[in-house]
Image (tube, rainbow, N blue to C red; front, side, top):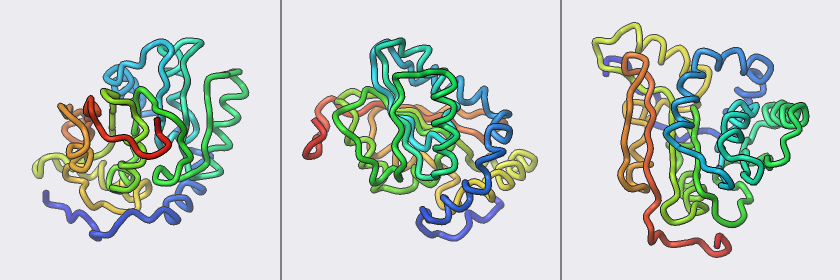
Length: 224
């Protein structure tokens, strides 16, 4: 990749909250061009009636509607979001639509007070979470054996795809706190799930990765 990957530092949770405090009011508009990615990621995740899905870094709740349409009246979405400003907008969205199957948790992915085992987890444009082993381990430990995972977001395209990489650079500068791993953002996930498949979109600047939790994965104390 011709562009530097940025400082090789761990994601900064407090900086991320500060970034999204500034972005909250315009977030839905900024994400509008990526809605086809969200739609495809949810299709890949394949939520089923009655299941529980963890929406990690749920933002303003843009994924809630599409998820709930597949989950049906008995399904449940657990939205995890550290930014109070973003979560307040998600809360308003839930109230406007009268969704009863949504639980909102204001917490980072590594500390979210999750209960029981969910059926699937979605990471939509959550680069910092995907590069945080503690956060990944905490979320994935609360999926049932065989649970499904999908992650979608930005990645560096091939070096000769300059327009795509300029787009990725511009989007990443205001949305992530570390560009470490932007060449292959799913590498930590690949070590934790089985059968990882990666699809690329946007001339290589966007990925959708999916896999499953092992059928005999160890469970943390209190997760089952």
